[in-house]
Image (spheres, one colour):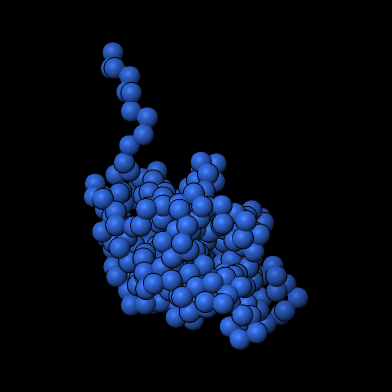
Length: 276
């Protein structure tokens, strides 16, 4: 009779046995692990390709055991699109921060989403540019102090923050959009479930998926790790509410095409029969 294993917790196989280089208290390390756990759970490491653009997320290519490609700043969705179209049987994900995805990369983000590219986007929203020194990001909150908004973000000149899940959920190509966080064990488990679901939707060909993780940047915010989580709960979560913003399968559709056709049921041209 085989001995019962006493192992309760171990490194995911999809995560390399190296020390990460994120700042102490940074949520990137947690999310990296959750992505790796999802890859392990689905048994897809051998056919998974990750895209790491510019920013703190770029170092993720050092930590995953799957194939990784570095993209130019903001261009991860475009690179992911090319990879997925050439290798449609592979699982392709981009791992992006808010400055990358919602600023220089917003055009690629919106157009990949509206085309319904069958990729998975992991989006870290910590309301600031992290790697380059703490400048104001598209997601920085009104009145938030940063290196480039020392008196706080003035919405009369800088505009309002972009709520990415709310924005993308209006597009027909998006199959699944959920906002999560990783500040407590309960929320970490929810985030892991969401990431695994997003990968599953890609495998099943349902459409584009994005998981937005509301995160912290203790270094540039000027807090301890625990202080950063407190600030996030008090300020970011009211502005960026957690939850599912779109899920076509939960709405009863098999994929984005069926859901889009239902929304345009009264338009004869849209519903004209033909090859897709």
